[in-house]
Length: 397
Image 1: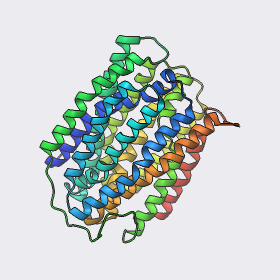
Image 2 (image 1 turned 180 degrees about the vertical axis):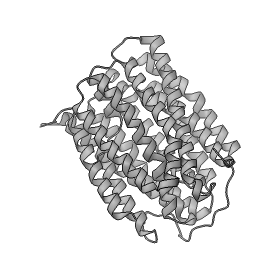
Image 3 (image 1 turned 180 degrees about the horizontal axis):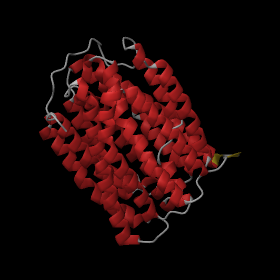
Image 4 (image 1 turned 120 degrees about the vertical axis):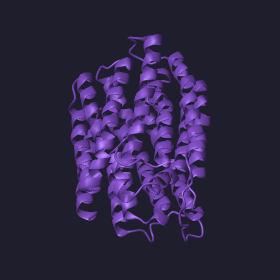
């Protein structure tokens, strides 16, 4: 990768690798656990995913602004990863969707605490002209962990219920227990491997939710991101769509493995590409691709088509996830980055609740209101992605 990357980039990347081994082997099975074992509908799945993301989003703002005020990032990052690790074993005992909501909420609180300080720590550890590469490596490590975790989960499913169309409670409980070890190792690597960086402290008297004092381009970018996210419902709905189109549990795991392989392989090249041609162009290409893939999800007639589309979906993730984070750092000075990352993650989180609720209602309906069927959330997501892309191109110069 040319010049040697700083220690913090590697420590944060390894931690994300280990954490995602744990999280992805577990949380990708949650929609199947909710639907197959607990028997809940898509509206409840949307509620759980939306509430978990949105309720924790205020912490993303608070922890990011707090890290600016203190001039420290590492402690909050370790605390957030530690909390997420502690709550995962409670899914072993889940007997109702309320249990699942409680664990998902607590896990997202941990993510809310760590996300903004972690991204600010990463951005402050690398020169601007290599920032896309660093975030690309971090996303690649994160997704390689997801690939590994899904592979472990797939082996467990194969050993316990190969060929079964639905997930069983016993299989899910085995996955929960297996997920604890890599999560704990990730916290240990971060605590021992990462170093705090010198950072100027912010001028705010206390952490607060405010856009005042931030670059106008960042504010415009945030509006476009929130609009895009309103159509970007939880990927749980894609998993349910794949099962609805005929894929077995083991085939769904294969689909997720394919997605993560594509995402992993392309994240570093996509990050480097954003260093060369500009973040906005790469991000816009990713959003346009997302819109096309979501139209494909809506029109798909077989599980195989969903599988192939989900592989292309990995290209969208590679183009956008690291690039968007690097763009935030480009638009704000170092002393405000914790706050900016907090607002960025919070904007995404706040929009996640209505996005997932809308998707669940469009699919299945609620109460006396009938839904429009499984294709409806994907048509809605594609339309908002195209609109958000237009705003990004026109507003963020």
